[in-house]
Length: 109
Image (cartoon, rainbow, N blue to C red; front, side):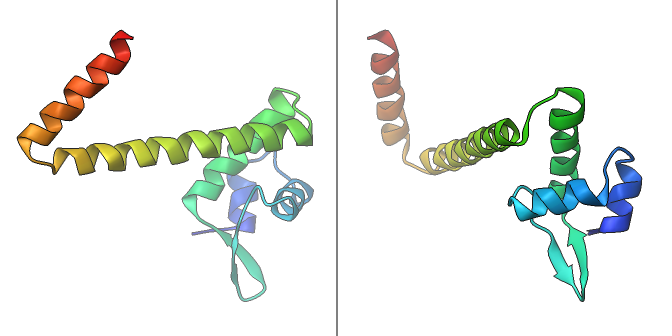
């Protein structure tokens, strides 16, 4: 867990204003430890991404929200596909082979 002060030290381009704005917009989701915010590693990485999108790439806040939403969707889909692959891998050989044939047929269309 990373405190707000640590986050600002790690990402020297960030200010409290940046972080407060992103928290208010739901782009960062810190946990509360007393009256202080603490950030999970995913939020620390997300803060770097948000800073890059706004400061280095010039995205406005609306575009940043769209990009982050799309990235969240991609990560969700990747996780779901991974879980689907694991579930398929647990099936009997004949079932897995049938799925492989069906996928090949779909690709060949």
